[in-house]
Length: 102
Image (cartoon, rainbow, N blue to C red):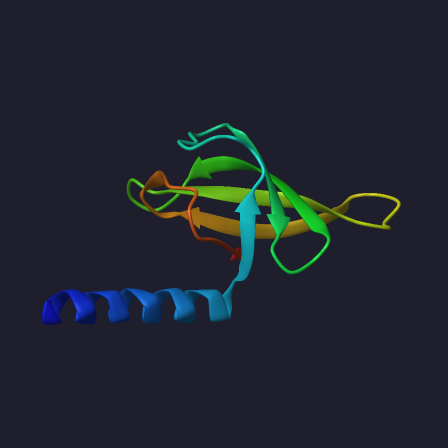
């Protein structure tokens, strides 16, 4: 039981650390197993912007969503952006966007 509590605490700490650096998003597509080439729409959890991108290969076996534009409520047109969303293990759970590094 003690090991389970320690593991749960470490997992929560990792999620808090990850969310502190990234922008939390939720996937709008009904796509539990995204694959390379899939187009993905995401919504900010704390704002009125939607982000659009495509699934690309990431590091190792992981996938990444490469976001190239956003559309915010009240904006007349979509804005180009350069963000990535890692899909660790290919899962769309707990998504966070980060600035893309050249």
